[in-house]
Image 1 (cartoon, rainbow, N blue to C red):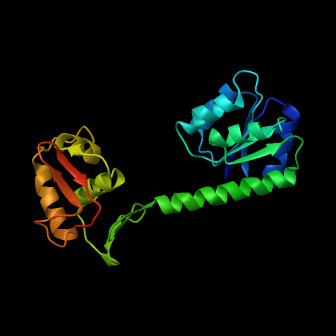
Image 2: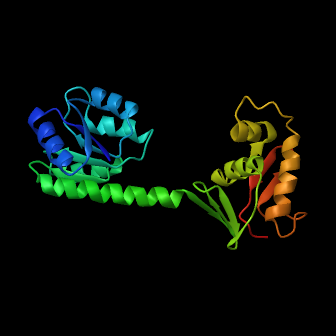
Length: 227
């Protein structure tokens, strides 16, 4: 697991790094928000320990920038102990909050806890549930009422895009781009054929679909799976 420590106090950074590396974590550290953000973009980070009082930008601002691109766990460190500061930290997307001075042993326990919760969320998010359908992104399987349904790679990509964006109406061109990328040079009406084949596989009555719905004049969207 890779931990990123962003704190302007060198002694604190070195103490955290030494303790966590003894716990078999790999650590990156930065003395300010700008360097911390650069390290975050360059490496796969599993948890961030973020001081709120940084010399260039505040920890709050650093947290906002990270939250725009990732839901990686963030533990905030601060000398501020007022309830309003704690609540503000959580409102910005922090997963945990520790007031200085703190115990390294407790910090390590909190790192383990937030990573464990985060990994649990990722496992749940790998599965998409809709009505009687369950799509597993990791194994590329589709189940209906517990029975596997065989899909071609093209059908998988189309259905995945639709189920991942349940409320969105896709025009044919948008669906091609989302499912295949802009380099795909197939005719947009080919999507209709794939949709027809998908309906045969997932709908109880393909002529009256409850999953893949036609939005006349626009394209397709996912329904709730109920008539």
